[in-house]
Amino acid sequence: MIDSTPGTGSTTREQSVADTFVLLADTLVADYDVADLLHRLVTACVELAGVTAAGLLLDDQRGNLAVVAASSEETRLLEVFQLQNDEGPCLDCFKSGHEVTSDDLVADGARWPLFVPRALAAGFGAGVALPLRLREHTIGTLNMFQGRPGATAPADRRLAQAFADVATIGILQQRSAHRSSLVAEQLQQALNSRITIEQAKGVLAERNTLTMDAAFDALRAHARNNNVKLTDVATGVVRDRLDVRPVPPNRT
Image (cartoon, rainbow, N blue to C red):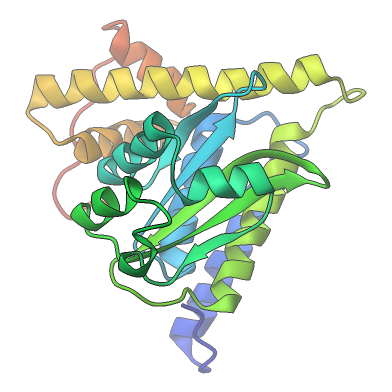
C-alpha cells in the first residue's frame, strides 16, 4: 500500500508510480504491444497497489469478455472460471460500469455461490473489480485480489483506477478519426495475442518442464532483453522459430 513516510522506500515507490504512468502514456503517441501493455498494468497493480494478484478482462466488442492479462496462472484460471460460470465481481463490475468490492469473500458466499469457493481455494480472501471505461463506454475490468480478508486502501484503489483509465485511453486511442471498426480491431488483436501467448507458455512449459508462470517469465524476459514485442516472441515460439531459455533463479 502507499507509504507516505519520507525516505528511500517512499521515493523509490513514487518513482515507480511515475514510471508506470509514463509507460502507459507512451501508448498515446507511439506504436505499442497491447498484450504487453496490459501485462505491465496488472504487474504494476501488484507491485504498487498493495494487492496479492491482479487480472484484466476485455470486451471483444461482440458482447463477450475474455482474459487478456493476469499476474499469475492461478489468477488467470480464476478469471476464466468467472466467465465460464457468468458469476463474480468482474462480471458485476462490467455490467454496472462501477467498482465492485468484497472485503471478505466468505461473507459474500450467497452473493457469488460458485465464485467464492473457487476464490478461497485459490488462496484469496478479498477482492475489488474496477472498470476500464471512457465516459459511459466500459470495455473491460481490472480485478485485484487480496490473500486475506480486508479492504484495499482507498488510495490504492484510486491509483489502480488511474492506471486502468490511462490504459483504456491508450487502447481506444486512434491516430486518425475515432472509428468503431478500428477500436474493435485493436481489442480483437489483444484477445488474439493472449491466445498466442497462452500457446507459447504451454510449449515452453512442456519443453523445459516449467510452471506456466515460469514459462511466461521466460517469454517476457526474452522480449525485454531483445527489445521486441511480447506477442512476436510468443509467435516465434509457437511456430518453432525461436529458442527462448528459462529465466535463471533469482533473476527478474
